Amino acid sequence: SVPILNIFSFGYLYRYAEIVHRTGNCVLPTTNLRDWKDLFLDGLRFFVILLLFLVFPVFVVGMLAYFVLGGVLNVFGHPIMTIFGSPFVLLMIIAFLPLALVVFIGPVVMVAALFNFQKDPRFEELARLDRILGLVRAAGRRVFVPSFSFCGLLVVGFHLFGFALFLGFVVLIAYFMVTFVVLEKSEYMVLFELNLDLSSELNFLQSCRPMNMLVRRASTTLRSSNRLWRSL
Image 1 (tube, rainbow, N blue to C red):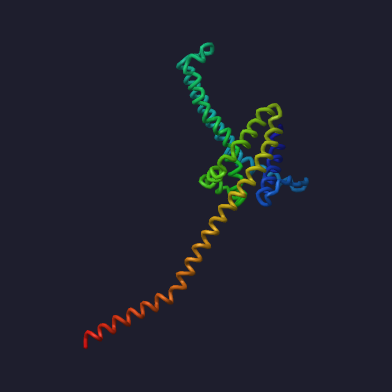
Image 2 (cartoon, helix red, strand yellow):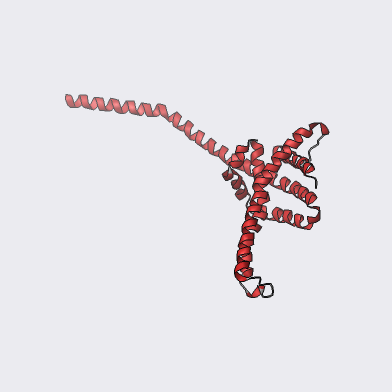
C-alpha cells in the first residue's frame, strides 16, 4: 500500500464518519479531484486519531508483552519441547492478554475519539478521555460482535491488509457512529427531562413567593398586635 494514498483513503473514511455522525445514514461520500487538499487534511486528522488511540497503545502494550516474554525465556530457557509442562504457557497468556484486550477494544475507542472530535474539531477534545471512554462504556455489550468481526476481517485479509483495514473501518464506523448518536440523544433526552423538572419546580417556587410574602407580613402584623396588647 502507498502511504500517500492511505492518507486520502483515511480522508474518505473521515468524511464518511462525518456523514453518519451528522445524518445517521450510512451514505458513502462523493469526492472530486478539486478538493484533494481538504481530503488530505481530513486524512491527516483521521491518521492522528488512529495513531493516538489504536497504533500507539498496541505498540506500547506489545513491546511490554515482548519484554515480559523475553524475561521469561531468559529465566526458563526455551522450553519448546516441554512447553505444556512449564509455567511458560501461563506467563505467555498473562503477557499477551493485555495486548489482546487493546487490539479488541482499541478500534472502538478510536471511533469514539473520532466521534467526539467531529463534534468539536479541536485537538484538545482528544484529551477528554472521560468523555471518550464514557461512550465506550455506554455502548456496553454492543462492542463485542463488531470488534470480533473487525479483528477477524484483519486476520482473514492479512495479505490485503490495507483493503481489509479500509473495509473494516467502513463497517465499524457505520455501526458505532449510529450507536453513539443514539446513546447521545438518549443522554440529552434525560438531561432535557431533568431540566424540565427543575424548571417546573422553579416556577412553582416562584409562584409561591407572593404567598410567602403575605404570610410573612401577616406574621409581622400579629407580632406587632401582640406587643401592643401586652403593653396595654
